[in-house]
Picture 1 (cartoon, rainbow, N blue to C red):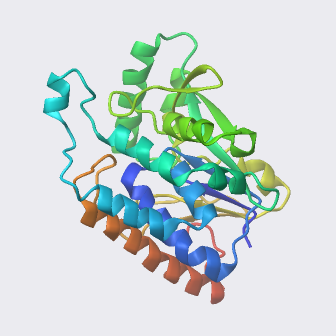
Picture 2 (picture 1 turned 120 degrees about the vertical axis):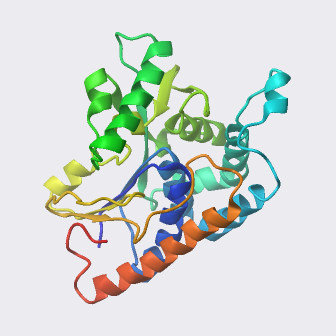
Length: 289
């Protein structure tokens, strides 16, 4: 039905994608040959292809129910990291993506999974490129509200895609996923292939570039965004799906397990609605809500 699927970034909003795919994947028999994700969307892509959606939801909800603050002043005074989310995310990735999971993701029958990262501008020091890139991204999303921002590219950020099949260990996969979500100072600077790598959203948090070749061959693609947009792009052979309502959870918030559970539940409900629309012949239209 869909030859390729893109999972947009969005931090905790991406648990909506997990719920959506948990329903739509089996119901529609989705078997894409290519899957690409940015930031937490790359994580959602991996666990969704493995069929781990529900167990990941339970793990996240439990982890965010332990009273851990978003900003740990005590740790900061001790010289430790101020934002616990980075360590919590790393621990979860390491627990879920063990040797068996990585082996499965690399099997010939699985989709070719790509993790989007952003390479920093060549002519800017990293200490300047990072805050400038984040500022431009936030301003563009707040003012122009494009589905596909352009500011990062204009600054010199370059897209790069890490192929999961090329990663031979759980540690390498975890490192790539952490790099794809790298937003200093909350999430530390990542490293892929010995070079700095940052959140893929600094180029485009809706990573559709790899889909173009599939669409050019007549293949159909599905793009799962995590924000509500007034207007979705109209692209031949491409279907955009957005949440039916705003997902009310902070990207890095580890204090609201109920909001994360609600995001996943909304994804399941929207997945059911999408399945119904596809079966009735309406879901093939690009821009499905």
